[in-house]
Amino acid sequence: MKLLFATLLLCSLLLGCSVLEPAMAQPRSSSCVGKCRGRCSKAAVWERCFKYCGICCEECNCVPSGTYGNKHECPCYRDKLNNKGKSKCP
Image (cartoon, rainbow, N blue to C red; front, side, top):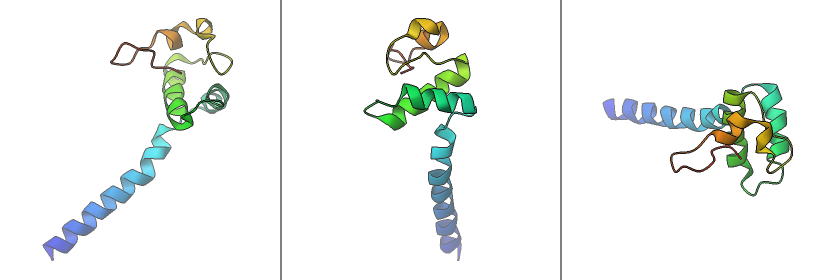
């Protein structure tokens, strides 16, 4: 009985994580969603671009225009670095 309960609990946790993770990666504000869709429209790895753009947009309240470059328009977005010292924001 304990094994059955543990198995059901584990399955429900795994299912819950797989459902919630994509929703959590989405930018919260609708303005960030639109701006990041435009910014990442030509990205080879769209989901990763959209995720990090959303994180940067939420923190900086801006997204540079265009699909590449123009980071001078948003210094906060430009200056965010990942743990490897490279730009965090696409």
